[in-house]
Image (tube, rainbow, N blue to C red):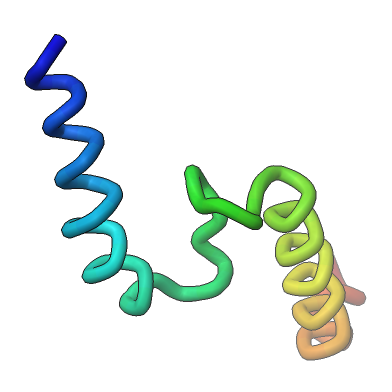
Length: 61
């Protein structure tokens, strides 16, 4: 049980502050303030941009 508590403390106060600034915004897994709804929002926006950018290429498919 002590190992689990120590692992959580190390992750929360040492690893997260170092890693979080390096992650891109679209990385929503297991991050506070982000989640499935935020991930879906990013996916829909990316899909919309791709449809606009590659509209001519999609017409012949």
